[in-house]
Length: 85
Image 1 (cartoon, rainbow, N blue to C red):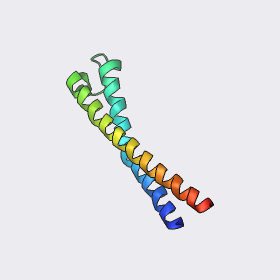
Image 2: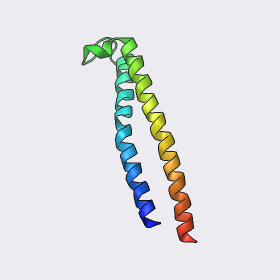
Image 3: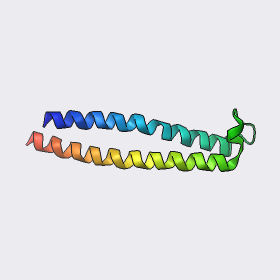
């Protein structure tokens, strides 16, 4: 059971690392769409269509990460309950 808990912890860390670019994309998309006002540090972020695309991709990654973390956390708590009884 301890091996399975360790594998869940590793998978949680891996999921969070994979999900980090999603948050970065969301931040860049929000900056380009609402913060830069046509004067972004990169010309790609001056086009609203690009910003909305970045937001959509980042949001999809973030949703995937949230679902995966919720499933892993639920499984981890079940194993912890079994271990404590």
